[in-house]
Length: 180
Image 1 (cartoon, rainbow, N blue to C red):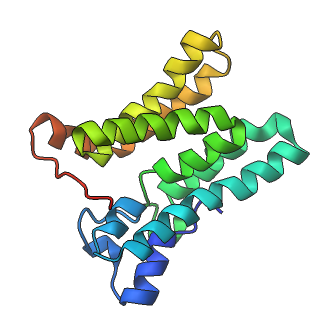
Image 2: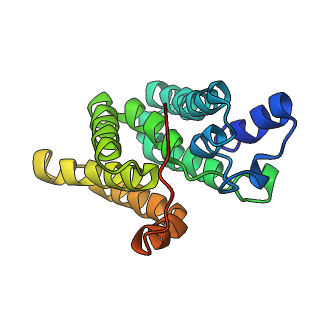
């Protein structure tokens, strides 16, 4: 399910365009918002979250010992979808869905950190990176680092998908994102 490219599909159906040729070329919700169609942008966000929730909740209820491997599979499927020659999204929305499934508190920590960072900086990419880093930091300081290795791997993967954004942030060339 992780490899279903909702941003690509919604833009193709409703705007008759290829999202990979718009804005950053990414198939995720932030780039879908750049099309100017907020309904498609927010629908992409919701569907990318939902595509993580459905399989991870199923695994959590039926095979809980595999929750981390299934979460990683959904995430990797989103970032490297075989439908689009392994070039997908950055994984942030999918990660949010995973976090809410694993522990609702972690999901809210991510969301709060993202929004506070965004309110201060107006950079979606920076907010995503800081929010991703907040999860292993929270686990380290408040839960004795329980399962921190998985969340560190997820941060590294999100950092990897944002490597071009990091370069632009360092060079002060990153564009601010309007989410409303």
